[in-house]
Image (cartoon, rainbow, N blue to C red):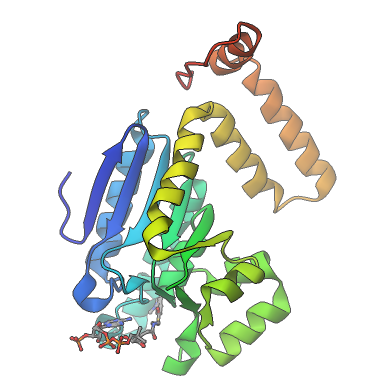
Length: 260
Ligand code: DAK
């Protein structure tokens, strides 16, 4: 599949997707969101894909936000449609069975940080700068930022970031629990690929069910979450992956998972 605004590179079960509008610091326009949705749906249905890394082209930006030049011209109805479209793509990312790692290599502002927050975890480079500056443009985050950031770091820190629109360093983002790790810029992709390779080696059904249990469990009271976790574990005992994974351990060999 060829795209105008995205690059993809495959290595074993890992696909690196690069947002590729460096002339606009990889800002998200309608075309890019449409292409991203289409690529992600394709990757989700491809059984050979086990993990995805999302990053930005160039050394300056992950994604510097929604495309302000395109968004400035929207009417109210179009703005609502644009927000729902972005939310649909980001929700799809959260519901995908394959984990997505955000490799944040520069500016992750507004919709760019919201895109990273829709990934399963974030590694940042020391060059990363993160923030939700929408209020400085007279609007609010529209791709789930008020919801996802608040769930991740709590109300008061989310309030501070969103009300002031301030931009924070990768180190601060890590201390606040937005990024899991901070690496030198020339190390970031190698570390993201290491994590993705570890995911790709694991049982794909186990990874998918773990993602499901964590994401859905967050919306449940703990007892329901525990019941849900136990149900998913029970289902995994009907799969070949469970039989293969445990047999491989007993036989002291590497497991070959099929995702069945
Ligand atoms: N949109 C469009 N173009 C952008 C852009 C953006 N978000 N960010 C940068 N660019 C463009 C610049 O206009 C410039 O283009 P030319 O002038 O060369 O044509 C080029 O990228 C290089 O940028 P700069 O020359 O500005 O580079 P600097 O290093 O000087 O500054 C910067 C880097 C990241 C500090 C600066 O570019 C900047 O402040 N950018 C805007 C950052 C920002 O405010 N991002 C949040 C955007 S708000 C909605 C749904 C979602 C959203 C909103 C509404 N609805 C449903 C309607 C989401 C909103 C946002 O994300």
